[in-house]
Length: 138
Picture 1 (spheres, rainbow, N blue to C red):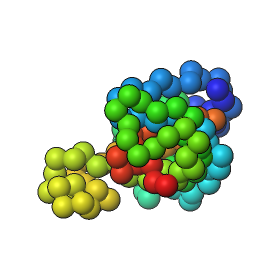
Picture 2 (picture 1 turned 180 degrees about the vertical axis):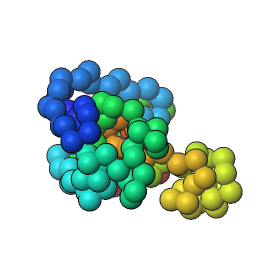
Picture 3 (picture 1 turned 30 degrees about the horizontal axis):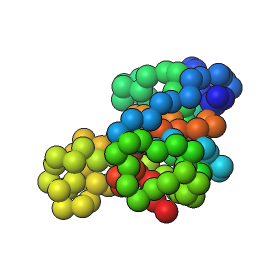
Picture 4 (picture 1 turned 60 degrees about the vertical axis):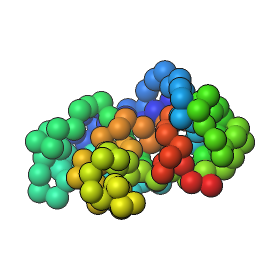
């Protein structure tokens, strides 16, 4: 599949990458629409605020993009409530599930959160793999 990847500060490149395999509670989503957020623009320039992405631990190449909608193409064996063909939007905030905020349902405030297109290498590509719990929304 094709993915638009940040290969160096200021340099994007359209690259071929492997289609992810789904397991357990994961689904494969064919991306139908992806937005370019202002944070993507900042990251491409090499900074988040005034801090270098290298100092923040960003690993390049990175597939940017976290504003995503698409159609489920494949579901893992443990998935319930989602089937092939479901139209979904992707919640880019992934909580750790263990901290105080995650336990009260406020994953957006998680002490150890990860974000699609920032910490997780997905987004501006043809398909993406994601967990169904709190990540895919119908």
